[in-house]
Image 1 (cartoon, one colour):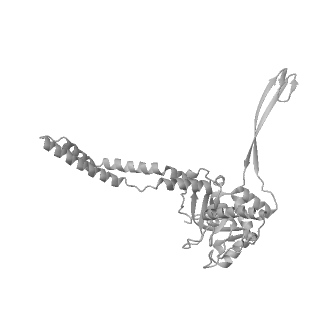
Image 2 (cartoon, rainbow, N blue to C red):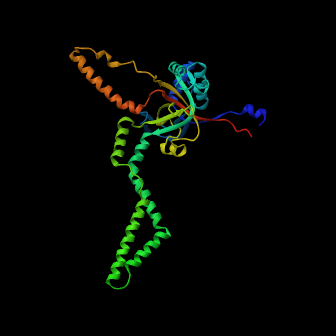
Image 3 (cartoon, rainbow, N blue to C red):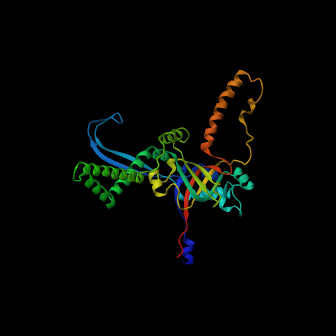
Length: 353
């Protein structure tokens, strides 16, 4: 590759996820301007002549002449790659973005200074292996799981029945069932055929013995997802190889995926993509490795509460109890960091030959 081609080469971005509303909001605040949208108008026209007719659209009478009707379709083209890259640059240059790739050697999410910086900035950028957790997809698979297991079991059985060994076994059984001779010989043949049939059934059972999940677990999974995780898809980014307890994660809005069909997305990229991706997100929670000092119900920790305070304490205490369940789902605990994802993409450089 010559010097000119290296100068003109650019990186390409495969965007998996773009929260365009957040992008435009942040960009407008940083620049003080409005993101321009490109609009294209297409006109469809028709001309005809009318004489002495009543125009019902305009409610006026026309004595004659030519009339032309036009219909306009407006196409709005949303800003994309250039805007997204410029937003990153402005967030970084303005001090609102912490790029984890630029941390010092040995610094990770457990570092006190790193967590202090995360609490001060608005956004974080990280690159690493990702995991996509689509709970609605998980629920759908759980509902179909018994039938899937049944299908696999039947497929295994039919495959065994097609083997020469099995067919030889069956032929032997038929031969024993139809053995000629006296009554004792026929009875002995049938008894031996039954024993062979039992052995065949036991053999088929081993081929179809696939562990199935109890139905109560599958039903409970569906209830849990419907209650705490309806329409939730999470992403987890692991920016530090070997530090599997340190990751940045957040909820993904289905409408912001560049591949709108979740089945197509999982078929294309998988729940555990092999390549590394970059995520930029607004920081929403940075838990510390210490006991929480913010206790909203502390105002009720006194004697002689009046009636109004007791009722309020009861209701708010009930909500606090339910928060324990939500905490198990939200799983935002040290050293993880929770974000509102804005961009998720894979960046590639041109190959040098």
